[in-house]
Image (cartoon, rainbow, N blue to C red):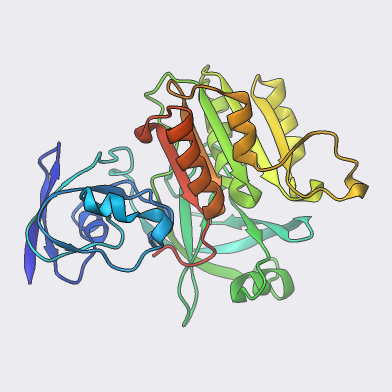
Length: 337
């Protein structure tokens, strides 16, 4: 059965099948709604169902509370129509003119930057270039397996190679392959670019970046892009990890400090041999300690879902950050699609 979904305030409308999610149908018909994990985990796609009925689908309870459901909210990556719908959310216009492609690539270089972090450099065919926004991700396509999603760590101006930061996850078939079997010159296929995590260049607000672990990758791309195009807004980058070795590109952060970007590393479980004298605890708590009012800031957060969730909850409820000024990408260690 086919229904019609209308987006407010734009007035755009599109057909949607009963077995399609709101996000799937919107993307298919050229309307980009905010999204990240596409798996009911991060809450980035949350919006208002103004009228009509939906099947809420499967999602993590922390991403959509019962109170929010009672207030008419839904996760558009999970919700499917049971009638014609009117939904309210802000469309993301910047990605509409970028073509999503399926492209082969060659593993040009493998560099192990930490015991459990591999940096891959992927080379596209000689006649191929991929247009993308700093912070977006790609899906690695695997035979007989679901895609694996990884953020691009390089900025668009530096696109000779595509850079991925891959953490070795216990039980992860693909990450095991990367660390134990992959060789330089291996061939991969991917689809991209995907996602709505990228720098909003039309804002003039100060920016706070928060990364946990390899959530550093898209933040790196965004910061390098911001420096390249000459953005002068104050920027403060927080990078959280368990131990010092997990901060696997401190040299990059040191470079950015020379360009005026404030950098605060935070360790949650540093062993004695690290002799760590810096900030400790949860990375988002360091932001809370440093900023009493975030109402005039933009905040970009990337990393484990628990970090993204805690940051969104505390920054909006305790520090006055507007919901629309919080941009996130949650690493679910599972396919985003």
